[in-house]
Image 1 (cartoon, helix red, strand yellow):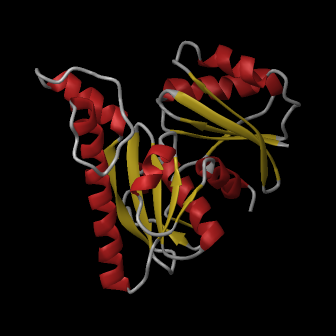
Image 2 (image 1 turned 45 degrees about the vertical axis):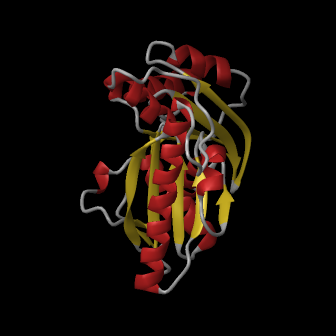
Length: 246
């Protein structure tokens, strides 16, 4: 059994893996000061893993706490995934691959490894990322947008007349309250971006995209996605497992 962890800026998602099968999923919200204790609380009942693999977009202090916990608990040296230029036929469009968040790369790697067809990979969370993969495995590039919660918080912080209100699920309809105007503005912006991505790929490549969606806000995002789409809640962890277990 291996242990996998996807470490974001405020949340850790983890699972155990036996070859290609993931099981025993868990997640928790953390701060840098609480991380070590939360790792102990969440992982104390686990059998000793053979290996610990993790991906992180958090700062170096968080990463060091993960390494330290794994050494202390199991006398193992955790292995950290990094963004790569190429793996398994998937080729990264970034010139400076280190500038891409490793979670984006692993989500793409998982989706490409499984479907091997033109893809639109969407990770909807605090930020929302969109990446297009062509049929030969070439990453065409992508987009980064603020997620709904981040956009609403920014509007409340930077504008005088908009106070933070209860969020609503985004719908492609005209808003008739401030909360609806914010969430539905997000809906129209995302739907417009995805429509343009799909039409651009259709015009240039003559193919339709399959959308693969992950992230904490994926269920809010699903109704806004055109065409055929698949919800993969554990896409980054699946990519992490594929990275180290070929």
